[in-house]
Image 1 (cartoon, rainbow, N blue to C red):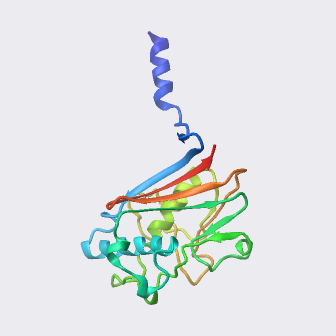
Image 2 (tube, rainbow, N blue to C red; image 1 turned 120 degrees about the vertical axis):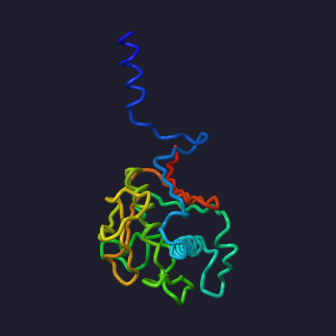
Image 3 (cartoon, helix red, strand yellow; image 1 turned 30 degrees about the vertical axis):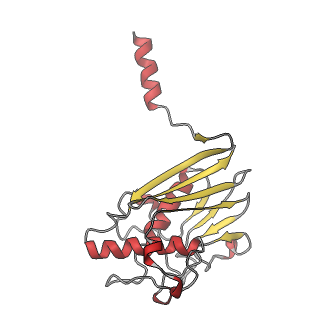
Length: 207
């Protein structure tokens, strides 16, 4: 009986193994949050939500400039992914530190300003994009990737994201950026899925 109880305890407390998708992909990490609780005020929450979704639209090429924006399309459920080969890097925006000038192959393609169609909540234009960066950072760290966020978002809470993974983004500064390197020996893929309410970021590796 004691042996059975001990086995059950080990089953419950043992770390979860990476999830295998089909025959070729393993999920290294996945996290999500609701876009309905980014901020306690409904208007501000809507600005945060739209700025997050607009960043994703710039990243996947759905939007290339402000005239391209169709909010019905931006706010629709969507799925987007990109892949990094070993040694390649992602930066949240193009203003990078010297160590990240040669191997960055993917950014969000955005600068989070009014000219690009980002919304203003009474405090900042582009407010909310730090939430997206933090979700990406959290997932990358849990996936075992090399990830560096020079500026922490400890001046304000980001709902549903542990405080240590908060990232402060500023498009004019390389210190207000997020850097992720595929330090593994296989390609890794970032998958962004928005179901109309929740946004998830998953990182997979070829099996």
